[in-house]
Amino acid sequence: MKKSGKTNESHDGAPFEPPTDARSHTECFAQGMRLFSTGDYGAAYEVFESASNGPELSVNESARMYARMCRQKLDRQRLEFASPQERYDFGVDLLRQERFTEALNCLEAALKSGETAPLRYALALAAGNIGDPGAAIKHFRRACELDAGTRATARADAAFQNLLQFAEFRDAIVERG
Image (cartoon, rainbow, N blue to C red; front, side, top):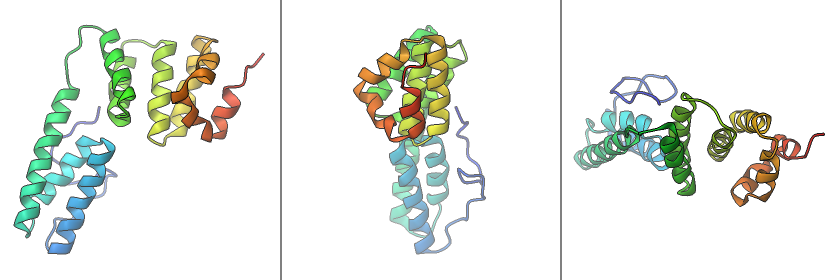
């Protein structure tokens, strides 16, 4: 999981421009809202921190409130789990809630304890649903290597159908033999 401390860089590594006028201030806040809505709370926190020091007092207050919400969500993501299975289960629950970015972070942390076909499959779903088909197909192919039954699972899984928009998945789901 990305550290979410205060920085002077945007999510893509470019320096944040401090908001100096009302327009750039509201644009900065809007950028934070976009990140917040996708579940990228670490990056959103950084943007809201920047937006909390601009010329518009009402935007400052809203930015501080959203920065606190991001901090709370990030703190919840750092839950201690008794086992890798609990972390995996939590990640799958996040997938069911369509909180894909959070699920991906949680499942990637679970992967550090060892891989299983279901874990790789869940990683494929999370990555695919946040628009990273390259990572998703990598995880799916690895899941299939670990358990040949994964293809059949994917064909029957309604949650997987969204990933079939990517040609790589349409090819990978076909039984190889």
